[in-house]
Length: 86
Image (tube, rainbow, N blue to C red):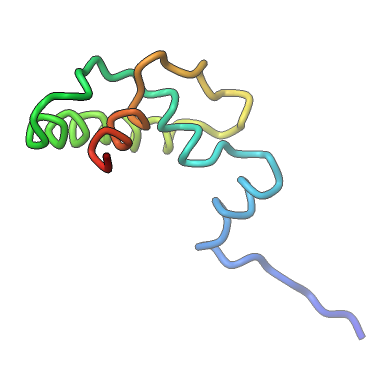
């Protein structure tokens, strides 16, 4: 019995990450530089987060390979997320 299997479109990114072809969203967020003070008021942190998310979405759409991932930023979107959660 020959069964043909097609990967569902909505799983394409997940499978790309799983197979080390695409960077995870976590790694992309570490590559987005954000200059911020972790002790800034929460509303200011959210504003920086929202602005940085625009760059995140653009980068996520632009990157077609894990090799295209820029170096990690010293102060990143991920750090902003941690400061908000803290």
